[in-house]
Amino acid sequence: MAIRPCRECNTQVNTKATVCPQCGVRHPTAAGPKPFNLVESPDRSSLALRNLRGVIIIIVLAFHAVLAYVDWSLPHSSGFNDPAYKWRAFPIIDARQWFGFDLFCVWQDIYLMSLMFFLSGLFVWPSLQRKHSFDYARERLVRLGIPFAFGVIVLIPVAFYPGYLVSTASPSIADYVERYLALPFVPNGHLWFLWQLLALNLVATVIYLLAPGAFPALARWSKRLEERPQNYYAVLAAISALVYVPVAYAFTPWAWSNSGILSIQWCRPLLYAVYFFAGIGVGTGGIEVGLLAANGALARRWRLWLLVAIVCWFAWMGVTYLTLNGDAPTSVDIAADLMFVLACAGGCFFLAATSLRFLTKRSAVLNSLSVNAFSLYLVHYDFVVWLQYALLGWSLFALIKGAIVFGATLVLSWITVVGAQRVPFAKRLIAVPPRPRADATSSSSAAYARLP
Image (cartoon, rainbow, N blue to C red; front, side, top):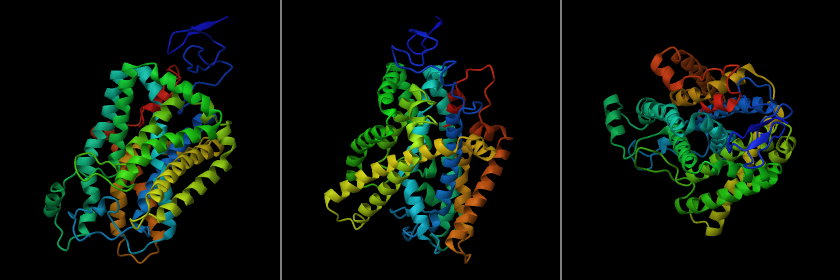
């Protein structure tokens, strides 16, 4: 009987076994699941996750592209430095609007960022094992910290300049710089995601350093729920409610910080942490099996999760509508917050289930989007806002304007990314990870983990 040491606890494990009897970490076997490789592996789950990443960046670009045309955006206050700072969320507000964009943006705002944190957490454990704590932390600081700093210093001021132009009668670059520097906070724009993801990665590194058995324990606990996605959904929603509802009630679901160098929406960081560590639990136990198996219970019942997502989404909108005038009873506010966490988990489960069910074939377009997703996320917002500003005077339907902004943003961002990869400094910021060698560790988690 052939044996080998467990990669986590060094217990001698039968090579035919898929799970270590001591720590519960899953091992690939010749007869069992193939090693996870997002770039090279033909495994259907691997392909689905890779394609899902491409789909998500398309949704992100579309979400920002149509924000100028939603019906529920409020007009800007009279000046760029007025305390409401509505231009942070809506740099440009067009007179042409369409309610369909409201429905789209509301749904994405509920679940999309939580799903991104979950997917980021999937690959933390294999990266920590390969690089160990200090190398991993250093790589994350470079990969996320430098682009965040560059973006906040260079990209975000350029992106918000049109928001200043529409708020003043006599614009000038010098006046914009003065007003921008006078703000009591440093605008992060869409790049808030990078610093919060970096912070969670550093927390995970500290946990790995001080308690290396914590993540395998989390994987064992997670594995008990993964075979029944409805149980996983219930537990995830319950834990999310514990960390989200009290903070959302105290600060409202909409409030952002108005000071400091790091933008934060008060009610959500703990929620994102729950999804990030949920991803670590699933990833530590094995990505190609359990919850994310292409032929698993989640994928097979994708229609159920579509129904859950839609019902919870509309229920949240209905209850939240009752809170918008500001004088709703406490019970209604809490009910709206509870429906948010249910809709958030439902949206994540639906998109994951449909990807595992339908996105299991190779796609050159989705593969390129997936590989360049971080780069596209970094640079796209400038194109979005300037295109929205350029179209302000055009007498076109909102649907047409949104389509123009989205299409042009995608093309221009893609061209920028390809061109930037020829410039050493820019390539350092948005470098595409190299394809893993055929003789390298076959965990594609390794390759994928280099992407945020």
